[in-house]
Figure 1 (spheres, one colour):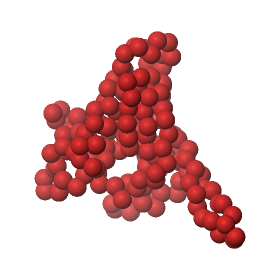
Figure 2 (cartoon, one colour; figure 1 turned 45 degrees about the vertical axis):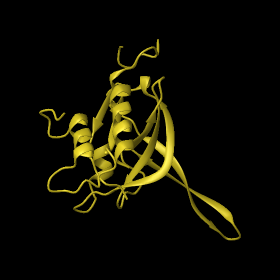
Figure 3 (spheres, helix red, strand yellow; figure 1 turned 90 degrees about the vertical axis):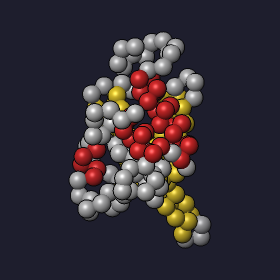
Length: 166
């Protein structure tokens, strides 16, 4: 399949295959190492087997998806409060980081948007900008906001080390 091709959707592409595998092992823990220090296979192995000396409380492989040459940034909307007589206040946020929840046979995935500790939720142009001003430890937070994506629209994925989310 050609990167960015929107033709036939028969069969899997590499992004679909990787995300399906991640979804499977994340489901097992909530748990094949390559020569890479940070890779999808290494993160999958860490999630399944734990990493020493860290405990096996890992539950998520944060990932970045690529469409064309650019990282994909999603927008989420959360209910911020129900103040002033029950009026609904919504808050928009953006992120480059995702947790795969499921992948169906047609390569449609449900992805949960992840944020980080002290993440402003906006005004960044790439994943490095999103995390550059964080304190010493980056903590990924699950937002509960999910999107459904056709994985055939993506041609790359970067898997970060397996983490425990809050």
